[in-house]
Structure formats: structure tokens, C-alpha cells
Image (tube, rainbow, N blue to C red; front, top):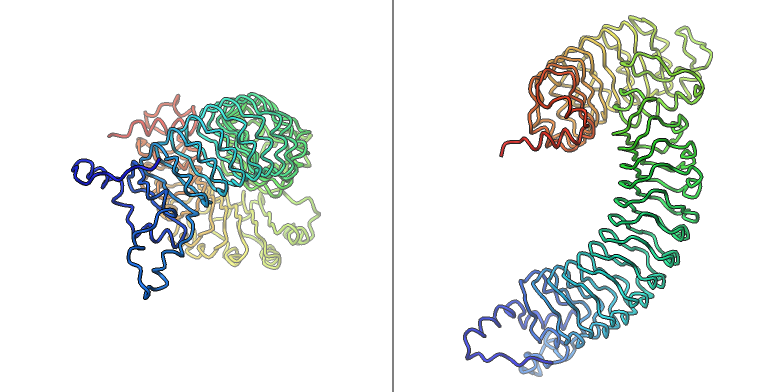
Length: 607
């Protein structure tokens, strides 16, 4: 029912009316009649004046000034129906039934208010296509909502809904529905009728089961079931043949759903559940997978069948009970990120794991022909590349054909004080990307190495006698991985700052008394291994600026104090501080892992 105008003779009522309508000027409504759009968001409104609902019904004030000389802009009678109304971020607690006076509405946005109910008349807005009611206080929905048969997007997230009726099943055109952050304990089977649905978000509810009818949503691309109470999922999920993303994190699942027809699935998130084993056969159904999240479960082994996931790019297995990986995983050429933190790995050396995905994959790949042989007994400090099995043909003992095909030079363990010229000639002609000169007696960086600046990405010069690096070292512009461990270095040249592609560096077991200052200039550096030096201080401010740093190993140095502010370096996934003379944090804290250590330090920051 239309409200009567307030009597201007009453001062208090006049003030209240001004508060509600001051921001809804006639000029704003006049513009709305021309454009068909009205934006009243973020105006602190607690109630809407009736003229909003009657914007296309009542004769506007400008009609009183009719003139034969009016311009095109003044022709009020040529108004258009309001199709878009935005009332977001106000203080509204109810919507008037007069909303029925806006039958042409296509978009209605009332998110971020205090609505506790909706008028039944809302269901008469049959042209509505997008309805946003998120971030309100709704505990139920009117049955009439099912009459919005043209609706394509419905957002009801962050409300207080406990159940849904069958009315949603009438929305045959619905493509996007967000019901996250409510208190839903079940889902009506009628949801299976929404067969145009492409995106469905049910996260952050109290759901324990899904109706089998969920399998009828053949258009579904994205399904979010995270943060619920699912112990199992229906096999009907496997019928979603167009599903590309499935998020089941933070539930109580004990097994992996069998996704028999989900050939389009690209992202599968099963982290933070109670899954103890993987069924290798299930991988054959999801061969298009590129992201697989299995962190924080109870997995103790990875089946060989995981290698059928030939398109896999990211695999997160952190915080499980995995002791080893199938060597064949080394042949998964698209795998760029493999996360193994928090596992009791025994078949992978710690230094290999700490160097990141590239090193792990190289290690696994090098072991593929030796699966039945004894465990490699190579010195744990050395990170070596696979040795070519081809017959040597050059005077240096290297096979030039293998160098050309693998773009790798392996001249390690020769006890050489210099590198033969034919090695460099072969390297330059093949544009090698990988050079291993470890376990020799080099006292300086070979000058001809610097001629590989246009191609070299991976350099290993560990276990030599190098005490300084030339300033020209900065010309290796494509260098991504550098191993200088077990040498006699005490500093790095300033030209190091030119190595903008560097992702990981190993300077363990040298003579550094501080982390080289030039390293702090790298914004893309991910891994620093600096154990076994004489480092005394941790430069927290400098580390905070290294936003990509994920691994920092400062074990067995001379650090006497760990600043609590180190806990703010939250980008770290692996922080190793054991074997230093500091008294706090104690060994018991260090043994709990990186996250616990960072939390411990952060709790001790003075306030």
C-alpha cells in the first residue's frame, strides 16, 4: 500500500524523511527514467521512499513545466522502464511489496543489507535475470521465488538459510547459483531440474549428503562443496560429463569419488579430508586433470597409475604420510609444481626435496632405469645430473650426440682443475641449458662458461675450490638454478643482480658470514640453501621484501638469536634453523615444522 507523504509541519518526521530520501533526488530519478538504471548503493538508506517503486508510474515533477520549446532531453513522456536497480550496501531490513510496480526489472542487486525476509510480490518480476541477495540475514525464501523462470544468476551467499524448498527447481534458465556461507543441512532433489546450471557453490554449509539428482546437471562446469560435513559423495557425481572444477576441501571424506564420466575435469581439490588411500584405477577417468590437491589427508603411498595424468601441472601432497614416490612420475613432463611438505619421505634425499619441483623431477627421472637397484649412495651434499649412458666419442669423454639431444653437459667427478676446450665447443654448438661441473678441483669459474649466457638455465659447480666469482657472472641472464655448495666463497658480486631469472641458489658449506646482500634484490627467488656457513644474523626486513621466497635453509650456522618478526615472513613453506647456537625457539618447536615455527615466532612479537 502506498504511504502518504509526511506532514512537513512536524519537525521530527521531516528530519526522518530527509534522512531516508535526501540522496534520492528528483534529478536522479529523472536520469533513471532516461537510462532505465538506478544506482542507490552505499547511501546509508534504512528505508526506500515510495517514489522509487513508482518511478515509471507517477507523473514526474518535470511534467509541470510543459513547453512547446522543450528539448529532446526534456521529453519526460518518452521515459524507459527501469530494468536495473542497485540497492547494495545500505541498511535496509525489508523490501516493500510495491516492488511489483517495476515489472521490467532485469537486474536487482540488494546485497550487503540487513534483509530478514522477502515479499511474495518478488515472484511477479518475471523478467528478472540477475538477483543478488548475498550478505543479508535471510532465513527462508518465499515460494513465489520459483516463478522467476527467466533468472540466470541467483546469489544467496552469506545469509542464514537452513533449508531450500522445491521452488528452485522451477528455474530452468538458472546458470549460476551461490548458496555458500549459509546453514544448509540438506539440498532438495529438485535442484536436478536446474539443467542449465553451470556454476553451483554450496561451500561453507552443514551438508552431509547430496541428492542423486545432482547427476542430472549435465551443464555444470564448477561445483564447490568445500567446508561441509560430507563423509562420502554419490557416484552420481561421475555423470557430470562437462564438470571442469570440483572442490571438496575441508570435509570428512574417507575415499575419492569415482568420477567415471568426468573426462573434462581439470581441477580436483580434495585437501583436508580423511582419505587414507588412492585407487589407481580412478585416475583413468580424469586424464584431463591439470590441478590435483590432496594435501592434509592420510595418504601413505602414491600408485603408479598417477602417471596417466599426463596433463597434470600442479600436485599438492603436503601433510600426508607418504614415504616415497613412483620413479615414473619423473616422466610427467607437464608437472611444474609438486608440494611434498610435511611427509616422512625416506626415498628422497632432503636436499633434493628442498630444492623444489625441478630437482625432485630430475631425481625421479634419473632413477627410472634403476628402480630395482639399491638406493643411490651419492654424497648427500651433491646435487648431480644424470650421467649419459651413451658411448663417449670426444677426447673429453663426452658423447657429442647426447649433448646435442639433451642440451646437457655433465663433466662432473673428473677431479679436473680446468675444462677441456672441446667441452665448451660442444656446449656452444648445442646451445646447452644444463651444465654440471661438480666434484672437480676448479679454483675459478671457467671463462668460457660465460659464453653460454644466452642458453644456460641450470648450473652445478658444487664441490670445487672456488673462492670468488667474476663480475662477468652476471651475464648468465637465463640462469634459473645455481648450485655453488661446498666451495670457498665468502661473498657474491654485485653483478649477480642481473640474474633476474634465478629461482633457486645453493650456497651451502661455504664461508659466508651473512646472506649476500645482493640476494635480497631478487623478487622472484624461491629457494635459498645456505646451511653450513658462518651466518650470524637474520635480516627480517630484507626477507619480507622477497615475496616469492618459499624455502630458506640456514641450518648449522652461527645464529645466536631468532627475531620474532621472522614469523611475519609468511610466504615461507620451508624454514630450517636447526644446528645454530640460539636458545629459543627450542628444538621441540623446530621439530613441529615451518608453519608451527612461524606461528610461534609471530605470537612473540612485542605489541
